[in-house]
Amino acid sequence: MSIIAPVTASNVGSIPSSIPHPESATISIFGASGDLTARKLLPALFDLWSDGYLTDEAPIVGVARREKSDESFRNEIYEAINGNVRAGQVSQEKWGQFAKRLYYRQLDIAAPDGYPAFRQQLEAIEKQQGTEHNRVFYMATSPDLFLPAVENLGFGGLIPDRDAAHTMRVVFEKPFGRDLTSAQELSGNLRRLLREEQIYRIDHYLGKETVQNILLFRFGNSIFEPLLNRNHVDHVQITVAESQGLERGRGGYYDHSGAMRDVLQNHVLQLLSLIAMEPPAQFNARDLHDEKLKVLKALAPGNKGDISSWAIPGQYSAGLVDSQPAISYLSEERIPADSRTETYVAMKVLVDNWRWAGVPFYLRTGKRLPSRVSEIAIQFKQPPLNLFNTVECEGDVCELVGNRPNKLVFRIQPSESIKLSFSTKRPGMQYQIHPVTMDFNYKEAFHQALPEAYERLLLDVLRGDSTLFMRSDELEAAWQFVTPVLEYWEHNKVTPEPYRAGTWGPRVADTMMISDGRAWRTPLT
Ligand code: BG6
Image (cartoon, rainbow, N blue to C red; front, side, top):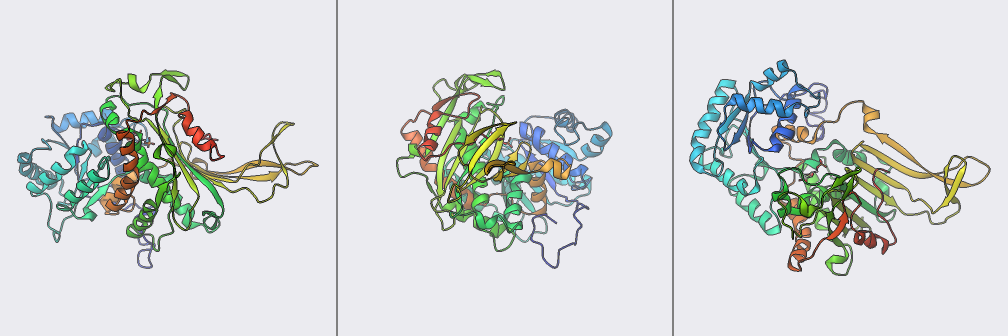
């Protein structure tokens, strides 16, 4: 039973959460020579199996163009997953048990001809493993292969009829489209071949434990939810910051994409929809998607002026990150010297609905910022009267500071936590306020490693639970909002604002806040 599946009288307690329910299907990973397979997918599958969530037999088949034996695929993966699994290293013995179901099949994914033979190969593997023909195809390929691959699966007879006894699901990595039109086109074309419930569009942020906790925190408690609206909230800041620049070999993809398409359109807007959505009538995939969709449809520009007054692209120049010299974006491998791709974006947006009207949501994401941190900070309004002085003290030395508003901060990574800041009386003979925080920290509270996002998501695909995936209308609503911004930058040949690597982004982004009488918070504080 999925932790977030609806709990009904009939299923509550049917599977104790301490006893995993092993799932079984043949998982074919298309694009198996890529980084994602080695660094994320196979480690996640290994950990799922170690925890008893995956059967011993369920075949995992790496699929790519290059000729390779099962043996050399297994060796390659063994090298790659060591250090990437939860336990750190994998013993030869454990690896031997796991790797028995690991296969590799060579296939030109774009060419239909190979698929009938591929189908036979899968059947042979399933026979050898003694498993059924339930199948998951994971598209870890470049996005231009998504549609051809599914068409070819159809050609090879690998898409079962609606009433077939066996299940077939297809997982798509991002990016799913590069603007509204292309996303609609892709969804439309896939819909001719697959049913929506067979399509799983991944946003790995939704698999993060702390992101799921936003929902449980909001709708599992009664004391915070009444405050989350325009009457009490001054503004919300959502930050997805990275200190790294471009990983090796990623320049080609990234320069074609940029921070808006790579992170803001998906991860940041998903975080926004979770923090802003109304409670669903029931905790099931459809109701959740419906509520998230309403938020995405209510998105509106943060200012009345032109787009540049509420959406700011930036690009890093050379600087220092963690005291180490970092080169400029334009000097990175495979980046054209005149690239106008944004490596940072800041936006002020509104959620134009009854709950949030007039409350700005400030969003920012970027590469080569001072640290890797993702968080949502809700800043509440000040009390109506300022009756006391607020001081901040170090030892006996106190400084008079401005009123500190209450804040609720969800730290998604690193050191996952929820922090509430409020005012308290400083001990002594005067009425002085001292700002303090109440912290809930995952590691301290639960003493266990959090599962990786891909573990949860892969398990949900096997279970047929699409709650943590993006439905096509949600994805299109997100594209609908960001596409005019992308077009504005493109048509006007907007040059991104420079910011030094190791700083919190361009000055113009600070100015946008200052003109609203606000400031970006320093994350991790
Ligand atoms: C991916 C982006 O979706 O998310 C990357 O393509 C980015 O560019 C990554 O680095 C960030 O994910 P996380 O989990 O490290 O915050």
